[in-house]
Length: 152
Image 1 (spheres, rainbow, N blue to C red):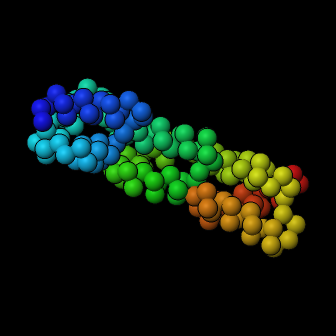
Image 2 (spheres, rainbow, N blue to C red):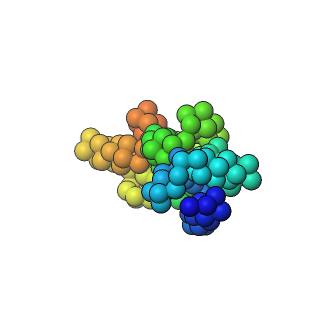
């Protein structure tokens, strides 16, 4: 296989969405590209700015918060799974103030539950919803309490 063929495979893979360096390496390995050609292709993609894990982490975090109402923990776990460096993850997550995450959690409760919980069972249901979405337990507790205070 040629270096150009490896790059063609890489560009086609990037055509669907942004990828991390680890995802690209795994993809090219799955296509049976030789290791030295993978290194060349990844180096060129990095040099041209087509692969950028920090940018990927920022966009992913923003999209998952906005589109799917994910919390910090869930975003972090998914970024780790696709091979993003912990420093890039920390920078992406630090871009959102804690107050914004609390407001997002409250908005999620308002959308999903319509009315604040009135008993312990309702509070547990609301808390479980937020934890499954990846909100830290402390943020989830604060959001449930704030949602109860709003009265809807």
